[in-house]
Amino acid sequence: MPPGSHDLAHERGSWRYLYSYFGGTDFAGQETVWHDGEPIDRGDGETDHFSGHETIFVDGEVAYELDCRGGLIVP
Image (cartoon, rainbow, N blue to C red; front, side):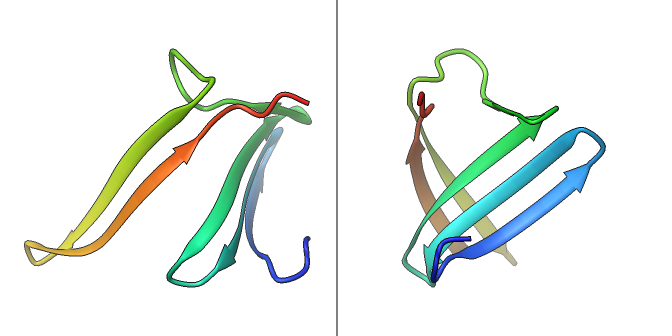
C-alpha cells in the first residue's frame, strides 16, 4: 500500500479486486481486477482508453457526480 493511499479490496475464489485512491473529495484512483493472479480488463470493445460519467440521485436531486478517464496499462 503506497503511503497516504486508501485501499478497498475484495477477494472471492480466484477473483481479486483492488481500488486504491489518494485524496478525499478531490481524488485520483485506480481499479484493478485479477483472475487467477492475472490482471484483466473489465470493459468491452476498445480498451486502450475510456471515459465515463457517474451520477447519483437522492430524492430526485443530484447528490454526487464523477467524471472518470482511464485505460489499459501495458508493462
